[in-house]
Image (cartoon, rainbow, N blue to C red; front, side):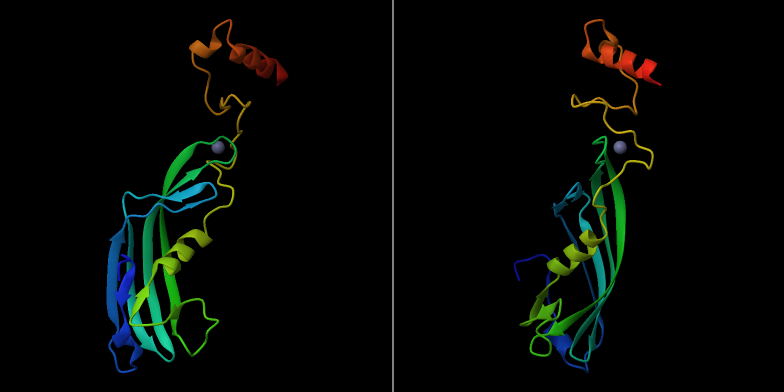
Length: 168
Ligand SMILES: [Zn+2]
Protein backbone atom coordinates (compact mmCIF):
# COMPACT_ATOMS: atom_id res chain seq x y z
CA UNK A 1 0.00 0.00 0.00
CA UNK A 2 2.91 2.34 -0.60
CA UNK A 3 1.43 3.68 -3.81
CA UNK A 4 -0.78 6.76 -3.40
CA UNK A 5 -3.07 5.10 -5.96
CA UNK A 6 -3.62 1.96 -3.85
CA UNK A 7 -6.81 1.39 -1.85
CA UNK A 8 -8.12 -1.45 0.25
CA UNK A 9 -11.00 -2.97 -1.68
CA UNK A 10 -11.27 -6.44 -0.13
CA UNK A 11 -14.68 -5.59 1.38
CA UNK A 12 -16.05 -4.87 -2.10
CA UNK A 13 -15.42 -8.39 -3.29
CA UNK A 14 -18.47 -9.45 -1.34
CA UNK A 15 -21.69 -9.08 -3.27
CA UNK A 16 -23.37 -7.74 -0.12
CA UNK A 17 -21.02 -4.76 0.24
CA UNK A 18 -22.27 -1.21 -0.19
CA UNK A 19 -20.80 1.00 -2.94
CA UNK A 20 -18.03 3.23 -1.64
CA UNK A 21 -16.41 6.46 -2.81
CA UNK A 22 -12.68 7.00 -2.99
CA UNK A 23 -10.74 10.05 -4.06
CA UNK A 24 -7.21 11.35 -3.94
CA UNK A 25 -4.86 13.98 -5.29
CA UNK A 26 -1.53 12.70 -6.56
CA UNK A 27 1.34 14.59 -8.12
CA UNK A 28 2.63 12.76 -11.19
CA UNK A 29 4.80 13.59 -14.19
CA UNK A 30 3.79 11.20 -16.94
CA UNK A 31 5.18 12.01 -20.35
CA UNK A 32 3.86 10.62 -23.62
CA UNK A 33 5.17 11.79 -26.98
CA UNK A 34 4.72 15.60 -26.93
CA UNK A 35 2.35 15.74 -23.97
CA UNK A 36 2.98 15.61 -20.24
CA UNK A 37 0.67 15.27 -17.26
CA UNK A 38 1.79 18.12 -15.01
CA UNK A 39 2.75 17.52 -11.35
CA UNK A 40 1.09 20.80 -10.34
CA UNK A 41 -1.79 21.04 -9.78
CA UNK A 42 -1.88 17.37 -8.78
CA UNK A 43 -4.01 14.92 -10.69
CA UNK A 44 -7.34 14.28 -8.90
CA UNK A 45 -9.62 11.29 -9.14
CA UNK A 46 -13.07 10.59 -7.68
CA UNK A 47 -14.38 7.07 -8.11
CA UNK A 48 -17.40 5.18 -6.90
CA UNK A 49 -16.57 1.52 -6.34
CA UNK A 50 -19.44 -0.95 -6.53
CA UNK A 51 -19.41 -4.72 -6.11
CA UNK A 52 -20.59 -6.50 -9.24
CA UNK A 53 -20.48 -10.15 -10.26
CA UNK A 54 -16.86 -11.18 -10.62
CA UNK A 55 -15.36 -7.86 -9.72
CA UNK A 56 -15.67 -4.21 -8.78
CA UNK A 57 -17.16 -1.54 -11.03
CA UNK A 58 -15.30 1.78 -11.12
CA UNK A 59 -17.26 4.85 -12.14
CA UNK A 60 -16.11 8.43 -11.78
CA UNK A 61 -13.74 10.96 -13.21
CA UNK A 62 -10.13 12.04 -13.39
CA UNK A 63 -8.98 15.64 -13.63
CA UNK A 64 -5.47 16.71 -14.58
CA UNK A 65 -3.56 19.47 -16.30
CA UNK A 66 -1.70 18.32 -19.38
CA UNK A 67 1.02 20.29 -21.12
CA UNK A 68 1.23 19.85 -24.87
CA UNK A 69 3.98 20.88 -27.25
CA UNK A 70 2.94 21.80 -30.79
CA UNK A 71 4.65 19.38 -33.17
CA UNK A 72 5.09 22.13 -35.78
CA UNK A 73 6.26 25.22 -33.88
CA UNK A 74 7.15 23.69 -30.46
CA UNK A 75 4.96 26.18 -28.61
CA UNK A 76 3.85 24.76 -25.26
CA UNK A 77 0.46 25.20 -23.63
CA UNK A 78 -1.55 23.67 -20.84
CA UNK A 79 -4.96 22.07 -21.03
CA UNK A 80 -7.30 20.95 -18.27
CA UNK A 81 -8.33 17.39 -18.98
CA UNK A 82 -11.33 15.56 -17.51
CA UNK A 83 -11.86 11.87 -18.22
CA UNK A 84 -15.06 10.02 -17.38
CA UNK A 85 -14.20 6.55 -16.24
CA UNK A 86 -16.29 3.40 -16.48
CA UNK A 87 -14.14 0.34 -15.84
CA UNK A 88 -14.22 -3.06 -14.25
CA UNK A 89 -11.67 -4.54 -11.89
CA UNK A 90 -11.83 -8.29 -12.25
CA UNK A 91 -11.13 -10.53 -9.30
CA UNK A 92 -8.21 -12.79 -10.19
CA UNK A 93 -9.27 -16.30 -11.02
CA UNK A 94 -12.39 -15.34 -12.92
CA UNK A 95 -10.78 -13.96 -16.07
CA UNK A 96 -7.00 -13.78 -16.19
CA UNK A 97 -7.10 -11.84 -19.46
CA UNK A 98 -8.94 -8.89 -17.93
CA UNK A 99 -7.39 -5.45 -18.33
CA UNK A 100 -7.51 -4.76 -14.60
CA UNK A 101 -7.02 -7.63 -12.21
CA UNK A 102 -7.49 -7.63 -8.44
CA UNK A 103 -5.10 -10.06 -6.79
CA UNK A 104 -5.15 -9.42 -3.05
CA UNK A 105 -6.90 -7.05 -0.68
CA UNK A 106 -5.72 -3.78 -2.22
CA UNK A 107 -5.96 -2.41 -5.72
CA UNK A 108 -3.48 0.04 -7.21
CA UNK A 109 -5.39 2.34 -9.59
CA UNK A 110 -2.27 3.86 -11.16
CA UNK A 111 -2.33 1.80 -14.37
CA UNK A 112 -6.04 2.40 -14.91
CA UNK A 113 -5.74 6.15 -14.32
CA UNK A 114 -2.67 6.43 -16.51
CA UNK A 115 -4.38 4.49 -19.30
CA UNK A 116 -7.50 6.66 -19.14
CA UNK A 117 -5.53 9.89 -19.19
CA UNK A 118 -3.08 8.93 -21.88
CA UNK A 119 -5.27 7.05 -24.34
CA UNK A 120 -6.94 10.18 -25.71
CA UNK A 121 -3.90 12.44 -25.82
CA UNK A 122 -3.03 13.70 -29.31
CA UNK A 123 -0.14 11.95 -31.04
CA UNK A 124 0.83 15.16 -32.83
CA UNK A 125 -0.47 18.18 -30.86
CA UNK A 126 -1.17 21.38 -32.80
CA UNK A 127 -1.28 24.76 -31.03
CA UNK A 128 -3.95 25.80 -33.53
CA UNK A 129 -5.30 24.24 -36.73
CA UNK A 130 -3.49 26.68 -39.03
CA UNK A 131 -0.12 26.68 -37.24
CA UNK A 132 2.53 27.68 -39.77
CA UNK A 133 5.33 25.90 -37.97
CA UNK A 134 8.99 26.76 -37.83
CA UNK A 135 10.79 28.80 -40.46
CA UNK A 136 14.10 27.06 -40.02
CA UNK A 137 16.17 25.02 -37.63
CA UNK A 138 17.22 28.11 -35.70
CA UNK A 139 13.85 27.96 -34.04
CA UNK A 140 12.21 31.13 -35.29
CA UNK A 141 8.48 31.03 -35.56
CA UNK A 142 6.33 32.24 -38.43
CA UNK A 143 3.51 32.91 -36.01
CA UNK A 144 5.34 35.77 -34.31
CA UNK A 145 7.05 38.80 -35.83
CA UNK A 146 10.81 38.98 -35.63
CA UNK A 147 12.15 41.22 -32.87
CA UNK A 148 14.07 44.44 -33.58
CA UNK A 149 17.37 42.74 -32.79
CA UNK A 150 16.71 40.01 -35.27
CA UNK A 151 16.09 42.56 -38.03
CA UNK A 152 19.67 43.85 -37.64
CA UNK A 153 21.70 44.01 -40.83
CA UNK A 154 24.03 41.18 -39.92
CA UNK A 155 21.36 38.88 -38.65
CA UNK A 156 20.68 35.78 -40.69
CA UNK A 157 17.04 36.40 -39.82
CA UNK A 158 16.95 39.60 -41.88
CA UNK A 159 17.90 37.60 -44.96
CA UNK A 160 15.24 35.06 -44.20
CA UNK A 161 12.68 37.78 -43.59
CA UNK A 162 13.47 39.35 -46.98
CA UNK A 163 13.13 36.01 -48.68
CA UNK A 164 9.81 35.44 -47.03
CA UNK A 165 8.53 38.94 -47.84
CA UNK A 166 9.30 38.57 -51.52
CA UNK A 167 8.33 34.95 -51.65
CA UNK A 168 4.66 35.62 -51.29
ZN1 LIG B 1 2.17 25.51 -33.43
